[in-house]
Length: 421
Image (cartoon, rainbow, N blue to C red; front, side, top):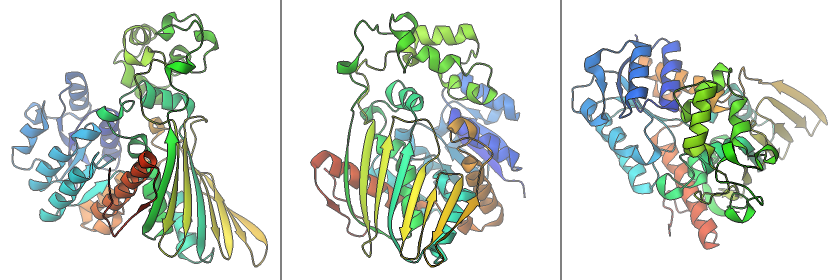
């Protein structure tokens, strides 16, 4: 069976998932996007018939189902309506994370998937890698005994944070969502998946520490392209983006976000006129640049999560401590320490790509899409582990953590109900 796909939202993520699906043998047969450049590029790339190219997802959803499944990769705040409408038409859904930016919309999406009996896979890609499967196998197989505590670090990367969360579309919470939901919902979800227990209590701390007008260097201008201190600034947009010219992976992202003209001249124009050339100390952004989340799971298991902008862009780092052993992982290798024999074993799970979204999150995007296409083709929905209920629960943990961060309280989770400010 050849699985057919419609793409709703033809930006970087929607196009990336479409290409991966095509590589798995799926056929991309429809696209909806209000941006003519993105829409026409994707239609041309996949040879989509003109009568299946739409400026509005609602026009697609108004028709009888044109494909087996739909990739929904609209902006975060615009997920719920297309997801619900397409579910009602019978489309299986591959929905970019976060599922939604508020609990009501997330619950609406879950209900639509359940009521219409359609497969819903949320793009929590970290669950699907060989690395994650190996780590979960160690834990579930009892190699570590009973897990007692976990430490987990997400090194966002200094330039990635500046690109996406200071200059980019996730910089202002009111226009997108919290940093924890937009970026680190991956990690909160992954911890629940790996540990395999429900969360009972949450606390969190974090703030916007560095990217503020108070930290703007003396004499700095408003744009990197004309700033007198640009040569000595670590967050120079000129330096960050110029190095990606000529690299086909990074020309798609992040350069493809800045401009459709991927040339030195096109980049220069984008930095002189667009948001990605603005000073990181302008004050437009308000999402946090560092955050910690403390989690207590059923039975007293604990975990700590740290997100920081101030690092290289790298794979996550994790340490799991159990009663019979421990494991340290860096997204590539797992080093297992057996307490009985006092020996270590290294399990090599090195992926083909880097941790960057440009490189498919080290193969994680491919593994997710492969599982989704197989689930649609075979009807074996168990191949998808990031389904509606799992994702709703992990999102509720994120919202509880944000409530804690804002109010200075410890939030107790009662089932799947989270008290919100």
